[in-house]
Image (tube, rainbow, N blue to C red; front, side, top):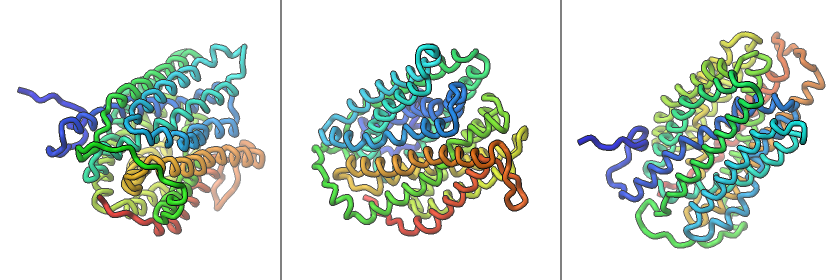
Length: 438
């Protein structure tokens, strides 16, 4: 008699000692990644970049729009109070996720009312609302993972979950790009963003079925609130937050402009970008994630940072050799990036769980997310738009000679970001302190 194949058996060898109910929770959280990754791919990558270009967004407006999901993380401070109540996590995730899905569907409908309203302004308003609900979703998910996933398999489980999301992007990425290339605008964006909203709602409904049972099978009492003074006195936590603020700033200063550079000055279509860049990236990421999950479990987070993040800084320097009409550099960039970029999110989730105490974890997560996402990712993406606007005002669409190379405004931004990444690795990573595993 054949056993039913589930996502956790395909992507992660779950230990046999885990209780049946908890194994169901692990499977639900694994399955939800299919829909959340497709939603994320549409709303943060090439489809959203093309959508903003269709609406006529400038470099500064593009930076502002891409920063809104991260700036909305400040709403997690309010969400932390809601999570202090017992057995509220899955309900909060379900409600916030469904509302976020409605708002992203509305974002895609804006071009249909182009004559009645300013699509850029209303897109910003809707994205602010979606960012607020997204902040609740992200914090709730981290808290749930800390409750449900046993510490001994955390790295492997998170890497398995990321592999599920990568596989989903491989399946749906080409479909989305073909729709964008072959349907007439703006109906292509209406269809794609409506699909993104449905994926967001499906993710919320699946996670809403998770039962909040701790990994050890014991009942869990409502956590006691942690005062802000205790968080500030935790030196390991302060260094952890400081590192991620600096790294996120160096990483997201330029990364939102990768797709814009490929689809704009380099002249790639959505299908070319998806097949030659995204598909290659997803395929290599799918193969790399098991290695990095085991690497983190074996060697810890700090050594992983030295190895993987140095690779990220080096890969960014490839943009020095990019030329319009040539796809070699984008292919190399996304191919080599697939071996190391996946570690950023993997380490981010792993350290949020492993480097914060279980008591009052939702408040630790809220403080971390507010600092790392708002000051790091949000301000970096906004600063990237400002820097691009300043460089454009300086050299326009021309090129600046640097060390024998003629660099455009995108390349100057990419190289600046790579230098900042190496600075963070050399001077801030050594200060990280890892807590003892439970």
